[in-house]
Image (cartoon, rainbow, N blue to C red):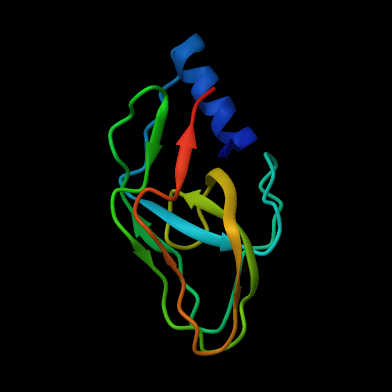
Length: 128
């Protein structure tokens, strides 16, 4: 199950309960982490070795849940990325805000020449 960052929680609360405009991002990107990003967005995102966040689209929400519509394929690693334990959903390809995060199950150890694919339907975001 994915968590929502403190930043996004505040944006949505202000939007719904105070009428403050929240403009959703025009595109979303999946990032990979070697530690839990937490609600405070403090995890360690992979860097170097040809790593780059990848664009992602989601299914329509049903029963409070969405998942990635298609496979998400990351570049072939040109250096070790470490053990991937979490994913993050960002509003930008670089920098930007972390919106949601969750665990990668099973964890994936990425070394040089490896390529990570997150299959369609494996990135699940649920509102509870």
